[in-house]
Length: 230
Ligand SMILES: Cc1cc2nc3c(=O)[nH]c(=O)nc-3n(C[C@H](O)[C@H](O)[C@H](O)COP(=O)(O)OP(=O)(O)OC[C@H]3O[C@@H](n4cnc5c(N)ncnc54)[C@H](O)[C@@H]3O)c2cc1C
Image (cartoon, rainbow, N blue to C red):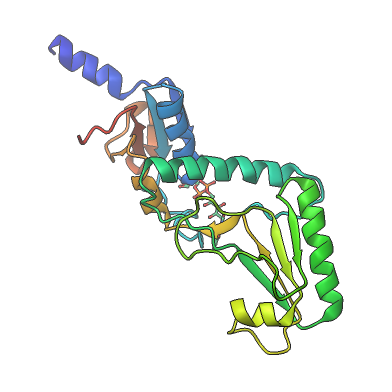
């Protein structure tokens, strides 16, 4: 065997990091290790093709609206959404991340008061400011259908009927309040997200013998620090 063949063979069954599972969690970890941390030899091991167990079933909604207990989920989601936004900017938003928010509506006045409390509690946990719009001239800012830049965070509660009708004419006439949580939205399915991470080079090949009996079922996904197809 030539020296270069031996080196190639060695390279194919050795890795600095091996990640078990090529769902979105494994692929995101591989991307960050390979691209952001410069670890060039990262291998994902999975018996299935990438993003085919749970990660292709997701609705792909995201939110920092996690009203407790505690602020752990809000902190985790704020950081995760920061990373998603970075990826969207770097990729020209190929996965169409938007910031439409989540909308909760009620015809029950008691529930309307609860919307205000929930928005204030979420603000205290770090989700962003609570704004209550109780007059028709209030400065409520509707969300654009596409894009995510320069949008408010936190939550808007609208309790003024004319303002509700103006912005949400499709809601029932007896709606007395809406809660619009703002650092929320959705994006395109996992494989589109994968295309924003060109450093994750997806290849299915026969894995090394040392994976034993499972070897025939395993697929390997190698994460590179550059796009090997270019
Ligand atoms: C219907 C539905 C809707 C959802 N909607 C949303 C949503 O709107 N927003 C949201 O944030 N989340 C949503 N989720 C949740 C989200 O999809 C999952 O949290 C996410 O996909 C989990 O990703 P994962 O990489 O951890 O797991 P998976 O995608 O399940 O990947 C795990 C991988 O690990 C492999 N594996 C397991 N054991 C081993 C092993 N021993 N060695 C090697 N590989 C192994 C599996 O084969 C699999 O490929 C939804 C989920 C479902 C089912």
